Image (cartoon, rainbow, N blue to C red; front, side, top):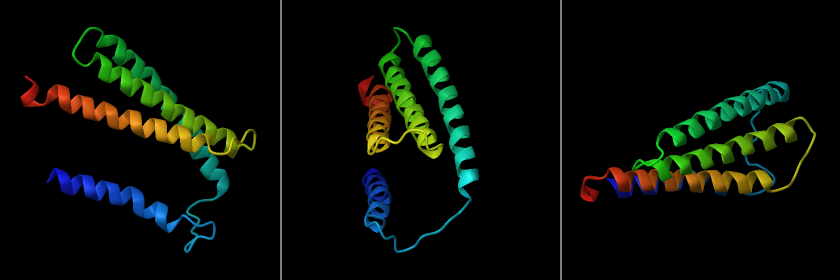
Length: 129
């Protein structure tokens, strides 16, 4: 069962990138106007900053516990996600655009998030007790 979930998750990440790899999309769909998209980007940024605050508070609460390092990793991933949203908002407002920065931050976020879950499973799995 685990292998099926891993394979399906991998395909869910790989297939869209293959479909949209070229600059000329096979399908180009607008779901919302750009003004609404920018508003959602700002809202996402505010929510992600709130998530950073809560993640840092949780990291403090777990000081010295078994999950301390894990919550520190999740806090770092929340910071990376907040930076992704901030970069997106700055680009959406046509203030700053640094090519590739958002992609790098997204990669950092995903890696930290995955490592956090992996370490959580290791700590909470019955074989470790």
